[in-house]
Structures are given as structure tokens and as C-alpha cells.
Image (cartoon, rainbow, N blue to C red; front, side):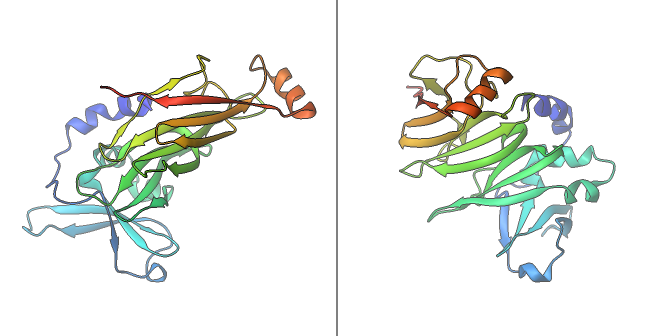
Length: 244
């Protein structure tokens, strides 16, 4: 994630944002079968007719959504650096990952290479813009905490091992920020794409259980033996750290 942020930092400084009274993503009334099958850039003259607002329009199976580039500076900067913006836009993917009574949430994949992408979390509220949740990874699963105030995301990254290495990210949906996790079992180097994670589930609103292969060392030989013989797993608990 830091690589992408560093690459775009100077570009972000040159972007002039528009009014912040618009959400980063909105649904439009156009039926999905009436729009292009691929995402495309849409330009509209602003209400004061002083500038042109730019959106990326994505057709989903049951709806059409638009991402407001002025509300997602990192995506806007990425497109400004592209030599052919439409070609780059057509490689992007978006999916609705969860919804509740208040808002839908979407995950937008961009800057993809060899099936590994950067990911922005978007929702329909005015307060929240795009949140970069992963870089050079592939999205696997998401789930809400029991009280629906936090979102758990699991990503994989290709490796030279028999299994991909993984990371989990937890987002506080109220404050729109990533939460820190404390390993209660004091086992180090599990997250941040250091180890294969087979599954991640909520135990309660503050605790997550992840499942990893039950091996002593992360080597190809031990993973091969594990796959052929027992497939035993080790469940590790992570507690959400409170800043207070």
C-alpha cells in the first residue's frame, strides 16, 4: 500500500478538489442493460458551469454506480498519470461487498498487474471518500462485525510457496479508519502478507479468529507435507486495539 501512496503523493498535491458535499459513489437511474458493458469515463458540467466534473460509471448486475473522481483524489491522480485513461478505466473492477440499512459499500480494484490490484473502499455517505485498503493483492472475502460497526477484509498476495500469503484489514465504519490488531497468542509475523491465512471470522465485536496451517516453519517442504498428510490448522485470536 505504501508503494502506491508514495508514487501518487506529488500528484495529489496538484489536484484541486470540488465541493465535499457529494458522496464518493452514487447509484444512477440508468438500467444496467442500457449502459456500456465496460466502465467508462463520464463528464458533466457542474451546476455553476465553471468546471467539468468527472465520474467513472460502472455497470453492475442489478445497478449502475458512478464514482466521483473529485471525491477520490488517489484515483484521480492515478488516472492523471495514465497515458490512455479509458484503457486504464476498462481494467478496473468494482463490486458491492456488503450493505446495511444505512449504506452500501463497494470495493474498487485498480492498478492491476498479474491479477493483483490496489483496492479502494467506497460507500454512499458524503463524509467518507475512497479508503485505500490494500496494494498488490487479490481480494478474497469480507464480513461485518456482529454489531455492523466494523468491516473485516481478507486479501491474498502471490508467493513462491504452495499457498498465497495473506493479510486482514479491519475498518471502523463510524470513523472510517483502519483499526490496529493485537495478537493475543503472541505469535509474530502472521499478518501483512507474512503467512497464509486460510480463514478469518468474527468471534465478537472486538475479536477475530484466523486460521493458518499448523506448521512450524513457512517453507515449501513443510507446506507440501501438511497438504499431503493432515491439513491441521492453528486458530489464532486477534483483539482490536482501543486507543483509549
